[in-house]
Length: 209
Length: 192
Image (cartoon, rainbow over all chains, first blue to last red; front, side, top):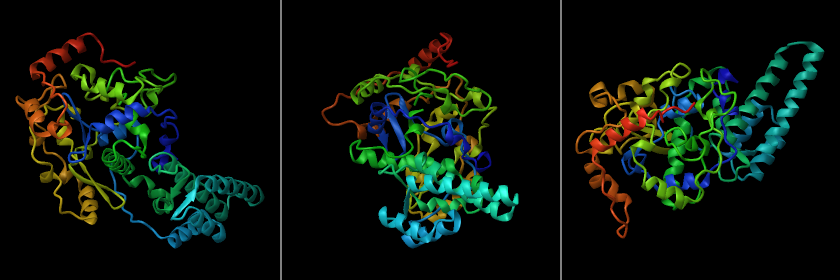
């Protein structure tokens, strides 16, 4: 987990989100400069804040992905999570998009761990065991970014597109997760400021600390 | 927010926080602070620099060194959505004297595509603020150049003020420095 650079996310999320505080700051948000206007000048959440608060990697490649189709999502899940094609299809159909539910991820995470344990007890550390282990790690990472950095409106599903970044587990930390998290937060603040403080969806912990 | 603003929700240090390695977010135990959005709004309206910590991470650098990429100025993107990241607007958060700024379109030109953004961030240091742009070190951490606050109220702030709202009168910049020094001497800066 620490190798992926995302390990700290397990410990840095707040359960309690102070709606009043978030709302007041949204009203001070200014899209043109991505900053809060306060009586003494401007302030904002910087990359430095992200890195000190969450210890996410800042330096690195900017994440770039576009929306993927449901078929792509099924392919990704089958190849990298070891999903049953039928199950994967059910997920994208149920969520009406390239998403899968947290509930499903929890289920297959347990499955992979059990399979891996059984196989390891039987044959020791084989290539197959390692493959199952990698799949379990990917499931966990997808779940983790889904419930923290990249939360969406429903709060029950995650976009499968992030799975693309977990293909090779050795290079996960070479992406600038911090910049992505910050861009996601800015975008949500822009939207929320437009819609008169409806809802800030992104990673609200980041704003609150 | 807890890092930068005192008196907003929790300041409690979490028991067992390991200063030399844990991320700063783990330092606080959140709880409901001031209550409704209106209470927060009033608090923000009345806020001056004594209630703000511009750069709270000085004693956290061992765990998390400052990276120059933080000074990258330009566009960031998330999926197909572009957002501006402009550290020059908040120089005080980088321990520099706040200056009066160029238009945001200069550092983040509107005609840019997503591929170009990726490319620029890859060479982020080429697009980072130069020492000249960063300007002078802010001894007290809250200084701004003469005329900044008047400029801010005239050029930026009016966009945020509705016609029927009272326009607040800016405090003179020297006042901010004097107050910040006094607050510092009172020892209010420490969290732990």
